[in-house]
Image 1: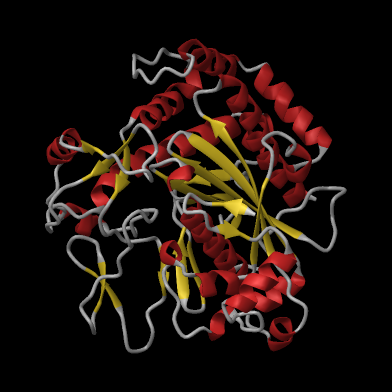
Image 2 (image 1 turned 45 degrees about the vertical axis):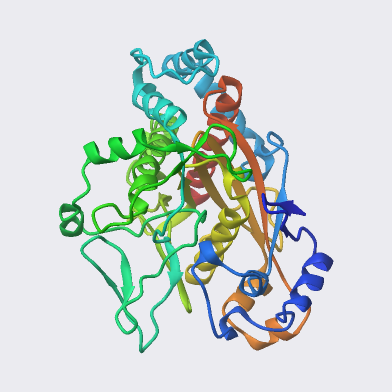
Length: 417
């Protein structure tokens, strides 16, 4: 089983899931039949098991054949190994030898900005927020309860006037705010730095060494999500710059610029019945940019801080994506079969993960609430988690670059055939 810091586990196999699903009363219940659906970062056992998700944590490197064919992978390796800027980027990381110092970034060409933001993500305070914050995956408002953004960007229920909040320690991913809402934010960067400077070291056994706990008064001017949000934007920028730089200079991408894959920070809103999910970006494909071939998720802290909650949130995002866009899976030549695949790329502080989701047509029927898919032999969404690739390890980042470029090129070649 996939273990979390609390000792709780995710099932890896069907028989494990059946035992737990029966224990929580959802063995023959569809996710859409549950009376209460929490936001994904607060997801409780019955709701999670009703999603029918298995988690399998895999080794780091044997991944290429799951993302692309051999020819495409070799093409990606050859291109990057002959690219001066890519080699300068890896040499710079190697020279730092894991140092957290944010010393001046040299001019290494295309990857200068990516390296700068990866260094900022690596050296930022590891903040574990102990306060309420808005999750990016939440129940969709029902007919009697509507979600309305306040001036601070927090969504509240108009009937009960109670905000939708996370419990302490939950992964923090603020809901996107409009420009006018952001302009009304009274919390300045100067105040933010003062809060970070006043952080106290936590002695809690649940806080990994080197992590700090934010303790500050809960006021409208200092909403809890601000602390994590600032670091999360740094991590998001670091990931997007790396993905873009690895991809956009290849001749095949430039040759098909109108329909080439673009890693974008544009957030996807994914709706699935009673809940909706927001991503931190996605791999956009098609002349009108209407196709998604991968989704992105970032966190300002490493996964071990709350791996169970992060994986459950990612499960809900993937299920919602399948529900909303059943045809947006990717394929690998020679590996066509009854299983469909989708890719999730995550960066948690200075660690990057790639998760391949596998499922079949029966799971598509299930997530759409078809009765026969609920009562028969269960089908599953299996999340194969690979990683982490550490951003300050040059060998791991070299391997990750090969995989990202190869996957992107494979999407072009599949789209053209």
